[in-house]
Each structure stands twice: as C-alpha cells, then as structure tokens.
Image (cartoon, rainbow, N blue to C red; front, side):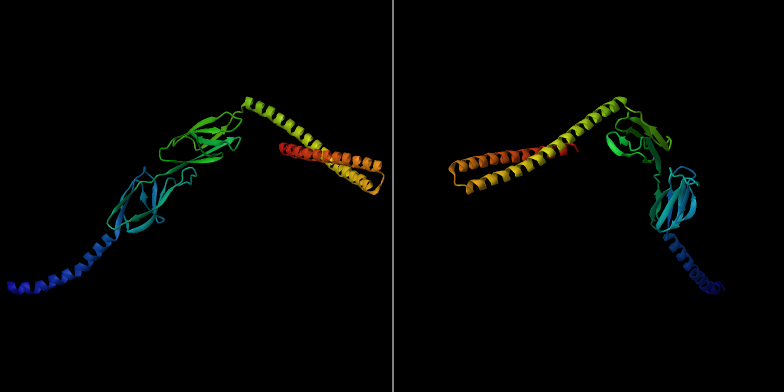
Length: 270
C-alpha cells in the first residue's frame, strides 16, 4: 500500500514543479531586468523619472527598469528662475544601484548704474552688467564692479545672499575733471589742425596753379627766343625763360610741401 501511494504521488509532484518553474523563471527575468535608483539631496524635492513622479528626496533604492532614463529633481512646485531644477540622463544597469547626487545651480543677477560695468573676480573679467552669475552648491564669489570714471563697488554672492543685486557706482569727480580738461584740449588741437589743413590745402592749390602759369610763360618766352634773330633779344628771352622756369620749379616745390603738410594735418585732425 505504501509503495502504491508513492507511485501516484510522484507524478503529481513532478507536474506541480513543472507548473511552478515558469513563474520562477519569469520572476528571475524580471529581477534581472530591473535596477535601483537612489537620489541623495535635501528633504522634500520631487523626483521624476521620464516625466513620472517616483517619490521625494531623499530617495532610497527605488526599483526602476534597466536602461537610460531622464531624471528630474524639482526644487519647488512654483517656477523660480533663480533656482532652476536639476535634470540629467542616468543609465541603470540590471541588478545595480545608481546613486545620484544632484548639483543644483543658483543664479544671481547683477545690474548696475551705469550699465556696462565690468564684473571682476580677482583680476578675471566675468562679463559686463547686466550679468547673471551661476553658482554651484556652496560656492561663494567676492566680486568687484568697475567702470571707468567711477569708484569700484564690491559685493559677495553665495547661497544665502539675495538673488538680485543692483549697484549704483559713485562718480570720481577728479577723473571727470581731468577728462573734461583733456577733452577740451583735444578739441582745440583738432580745430587747430583742421585750420592748418585748410590753409595748407589753399596754399597747395595756389602753388599748383602758379606753377602751371609760370611754366606756360616760360614756354612763351622760349618760343620768342626761337623766333627772333636779334642776338640781344635772344639773350633777353632766354634769360626770362630761365627765370620763369626757376619760378615754376619753386612754385611746384611749394605745391608738394604744402600738399604733404595738408594731408598730415588732415590725418591729425581725425
């Protein structure tokens, strides 16, 4: 009787095991196709995976499908331009745990009166106002705001400082007095050089015309010299030809010098 009982129980046990094996295999495949995600951050930030909320920080070992995902950690329900959310792509391998530590950015806007002032960190130029400073974590920046003709201003930007800074720079009166004096001197110099350029241009034109007229007169006397037979008249015409040639050459030399001076004064007046 005992042997008979064993004979019908054995096939039933084998059949039950065959029915259970697919479920076990399926469970093993499911576990192998999943990984775990942890997010370490201050308490209360919402965590979204591929647009679906999966919890709030700190998040510990939440099962997620293996593969690449888009992870978003939202710092506030309300949109805050100065404290943007953190987002990145993460890859979770099957059976592994990925720990993410979001590094949040804090923005600080710096403006000034007058605009366009230089924003300096030590001796490095970061930009000109209006300027947006990006800070990570617990960074702290000691900045100087500088503009020619104004006294520099100094400010500190960190995670506890205001998100907006407006700096009103104070005028350097001594600088502006020197600038006004130098500007007046430059204007006077330009006016003087422009006047000299006009005078030189006038002299150059006059000398050029005179050189042409004198050359024509010398040519006329030389023509008369060739036409007469009287030796005394020939000598007189030749003497006048040489004299007007000399006058024409001197006028042309004056034309060249005055033209050069006029061009020089013109360049200096610009």
